[in-house]
Image (cartoon, rainbow, N blue to C red; front, side, top):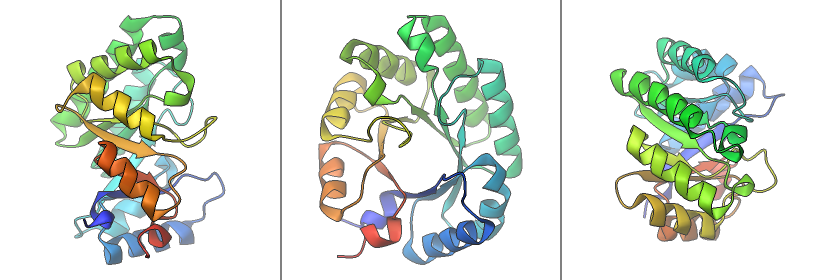
Length: 215
């Protein structure tokens, strides 16, 4: 398969420079990656350097903790879409999940889904699998599906671990075939990437994308 076509080339380090973002966009265009995912403050650079290419500018919302209100997330999304993001990766409120405050989780997902859908974009909901029980993961996956998310994303890459094959299998079990899966965090070699795709992932978030596709 063409692995490059399912990769979100990602650079979310706090110390990432403008030059690194520009180089990331150039590499993405040359390699045919699906998207370039950067922090909101770097989104304008990505949008301008991906203009005219099929590579989607992507940014993160409430990253990496998810610990802001639904309204604040909605404002971040509106700004990102206004700048030119075509894809948005939003971290859910993990604390609300732990409190079983599902109304908050549902509200933030509905607001986000409506905004992104109206803009013709793609919404990926980051559930941070490392911090959830099986029951919590099941509930949040079903909620993401029912509120209109395009993808459930495994991880931010900033928690205790990244994606696992078990995560992908479980998410696929919970959401069926109606929603796609993005595996992210700790994907450092070609073989593991292929295993994640075989397990059911549709997209991979990778911070060393250029090296990953080299055999």
